Image (cartoon, rainbow, N blue to C red; front, side, top):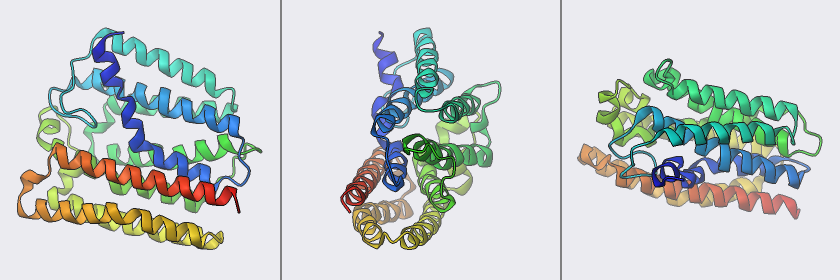
Length: 286
């Protein structure tokens, strides 16, 4: 396999999307562990890398993208690999349930519509933003919760789905903040570009406040006070870096660069993943 293909699949980028998986799994009352492994493989080793690869195949980026400072140019091989990964993902999803498989297929189709130049949902700031929030947040939470539960329930708690969507919604504009000029040159107006540099930070702060309000309601209504407190503690490093970075951008917009964005991504992802994994372990041993 060509080096560019492996690079542009960006397997490591799955770390940034993993918190929703651990959040959903931590809230499943009775976990089917075999399905939990399959769901993890389908999402993080097949669907997300294929989505990354297809997006790179369409965009042919020459400047930094999420997780890659110097992306290589894609070849036709990358396209075929993404098709194979998607096909394997849908087929493997059938081992979980027909609902899970349909959901994965829908996610893949929407992801393609997001990147495909004939449709290119990403070029529309609000539609593109809502697409990511709904599918990487709420839909993914539903898929994980449904797929990992012993009963394969289709009744997934709405407060948790909303919280997952808000977590993605608050963070996503920050991942776009260093690409304003490159995206604009490619005919894409991102939601972060619409908000502006300062507006992106303000929007993120507001949405994160809302998300933690919903999380507070969910955790307290389900008698998970300890879990909610742990979530706040794990989130402290993310908040500290967020305000540190916001202060730098306020003084000089040039600080809204790739380096700071990736540092923010890494800190937020590690802290949130560890928080939900800890809550999962806590719930398992209660």
